[in-house]
Amino acid sequence: MIAKLSGTLERFMGSQAIVDVNGVGYRVACSARTLRQIGPAGAAVSLLIETQVREDAINLFGFATAEEQDWFNLLTTVQGVGAKVALSILGSMSPEQLVTIIASQDKAAMAQADGVGPKLALRLITELKDKVPAFVAGHVSSGSDMGAAADISASGGIARDALSALVNLGYRRAEAFSAVTAVTRRNPEAKLNDIIRLSLAELSRKESAA
Image 1 (tube, rainbow, N blue to C red):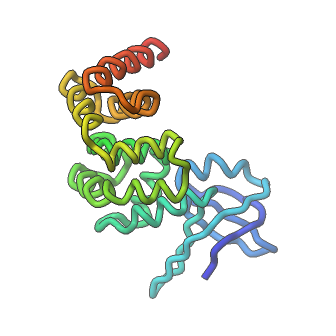
Image 2: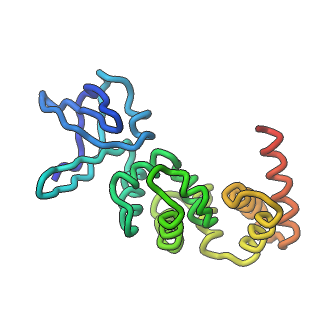
């Protein structure tokens, strides 16, 4: 099995990269995010590889980082999510956004990726929401933004009540979740009303900055 390719980026073919390794060209499917990261044609490139062997083909999927590769493997554990859909999701959302979307159960945001309809978005969130805290713990420290988001997903309580209140006020789940995450990290002992008040201030500050 091929686990890594290092060589020269020969050219792009749609969502694929042709990597020349000692005169042999390998066609590697990548997310849009990885394609943006690996540089122009002629540049040196190194990709982590997932190899998919079928009766009629050997398909290679490439990743610029181990984190993206791990997310690919996690996403493809969900029924109905093949390699193409997983790459579409990874090209549309950063790891931080994925954590927030899954933890906040924002089906509309998940469905923005090509190939992900409402039913599949719901299945992704339902099947992955309990896996996210342990998955994130293996990649980031508990003090990071992703770690804090996963902690809220796991702990629930007043953080979820605050999230529900903000959504009822008309805020999108993902942006409300990000605000609650930031507030609870800075104020771990805050009461529900304080979390809501501070989260509203956080949302207002972000809107003003935009």
